[in-house]
Image (cartoon, rainbow over all chains, first blue to last red; front, side, top):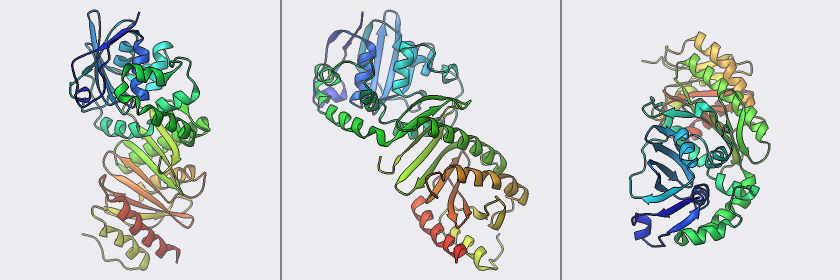
Length: 266
Length: 116
């Protein structure tokens, strides 16, 4: 069982690198690979009668859709498919972000259903919050090191040799893999957390994730109350500069809050 | 129309309007009570009283590893720029597209007028 990766020439393939035709590779690993090489672009996934698309930006899925779903729900649905094709597409990237969970969380949730809260899912056609794009844009920065952090943690689901897989599947991008490894070494400098609307730590990596999650949850609630009192609308984000560090908090449209703490230059 | 600044502190706050788009500003003491203000009338005393203590609690929550240089709290309608003034907090109401670098410098000057 597995997915084949193939497809028409894309902008990246026309500009250099290899096209890959693989068989027997798990979709999980193909998606993980895009995270490792910090890929940006659209991939169409076909599985029998089903089809969907995964939109990546710098290795993070920021939009996913199937016939019936979009967002986290669509990403999880697609990741549950056991065989099919994974096709690089020239399709334009979505203008709005619908996926709020980092790639590591999605991949883990695909293996362990329930790791992503139901609130993170939405049917197609659901009203989008106007600040969703802005929030997600910030989150993409905040969660930039997810894939590399997964490498540093030695996630059991990851290929035993991610560098080898990168070279085999997309040699054109393989040169970027050492950079990912370098970022993995730097990852502990930055702490990332994802907190549920109820203040529970859903995902996190780095030092003292629980401490940061508590602070993020408290700050997010205070910000919400301040916004209500001052008639300033809904909370989008908070950035705090302390010496050479920056703490940031971003509220997602579905109520989840992501936060990070690390050096200003990270 | 805004009243003419009548004392150095109000004048310092008024100077922040040199930054394009700044709506106004106010200073909260450690208890969250406003001690100076240069704001449109829409931000009345009751509004500042209600939000002041929460702003100071938020400020305290983000000050674990030392007093922040500044904080920018972004809402859908506008943003709040915060920076320390001694034990107090200078709060500037700004549009979402404010020039943060310029505001940071201008607010540093204003803060010094309060610390003098």
